[in-house]
Image (cartoon, rainbow, N blue to C red):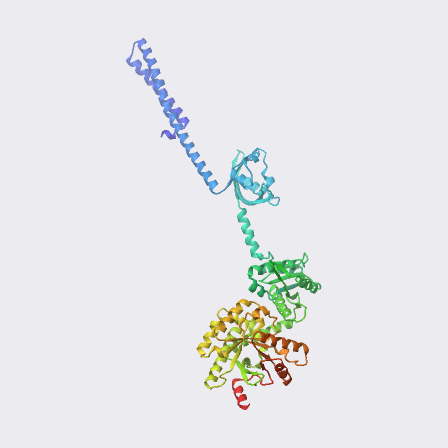
Length: 629
């Protein structure tokens, strides 16, 4: 109860006690004492006793109040320490602003946000608003005015200048903590939090959402936004789709780290060709898009972009000669949306890749879409052909030039299309390689050839003849290629010694080391390896000597004009000499005349293949042909 007494209660208790003491003590003494001298003496003692009793009472009351105050002060100090720990733990900067005298009190954490120390500031005269970013000063001013007017706390984000000059993002909160009797603000207080890391992370996320992290160029999403914005203000614009030619070869041979550096350098070259109003985006691995206003200057811009790559790119110790193909779609005639312009420019770009001229760009035309639809139909028909077993294997004999004896057969695929009739491989094999349909198609042909070999073996036909089967580079790139064909061979039951696998020079241009390893595995299993169409693939002789080869096949383009064409004579002689030096069998393809045969014999070629002896035939026709001859 004593802990709850305030000063007024203490005074009332003291006054009541005094009145009662005086009244009752005097009457008690008068009642018992009649002697005047003794009465005076007792009154004196009574006064001393009163002083003593009241002193004890006052001491008790005052001591109790002091203990209460000390207890409250202790709790207050504990709360202050607890609050300080919370503020420090939360890394909060605290500020207290005397709104009347314009003085500020801040803690050390608050100062640290701006790179300041206590001795760097003047608590009285510091105007912190001068450090707020000019674009954010109105935000801070309005927040303070609003909290003073409406008495509601605020939370805002703004930038303040650090001591070293950069800007720090601050999350600030504040409120009016003291007002006068009229309601005018006297003091404001609040906290600051450094949110620079969060803001930077948000900006990084936003940047990555709209930009390519490798080249820092806008990405596909940003491109679409920019195009849609331009379509409103600039209805006549050009959409240029760029793709690097054979860039996959760089990644395969040198790795993606070096390939990424090439992409960065290419992007820099392209950017150097653009005007301030042009917009460039990276939309894929080696694909870029440029938006430019108008149409008349586009052809010159394409030439400029192509010429920017004429100087080789230097990366580490390597020098790369990179080229590009470009497709152009013009708005509004070629499309009025992002999807249509991208699709049509992409279509034109693929047409540019097919062009044999030095011109590396093409403008979209409606006929390109028609061609694309035909190609798409071809893809679907080819898938059905594989499923429906519409592919036929023909065989063309390989003949020894000196004995006219059949030493081998080359298996050649034909497509018995249900509508278009018999289709030659030139009309679908290249597309099958692009779509990777060559993988199931190649395995199907491999199986058909082996089954035919097994049938002939049971009929005692072609016992000493080796059958050559063409293998695509797309197949060889498959990690499990060797395992797949071995599984087929073992299941059919044919010896690998009777099979020759034909590859073209272009196969080992992309990844020669891996190509050589795969061919060595095949040779170790008993397969023979030959290079088809030799002389057309720009192969390196340093790679050629590392391959486990058994035969070179001279391409028919070097045979057809023999013996009249001197250039073809020189090339044919060189290939034959090279084959002999490497101890390889040399076969000439496309031999059609006796004069060609005589030239080949004269220069030491081993064997031939061509219409002079026999055309490609089905298995049944081949057996009948041999019976007749």
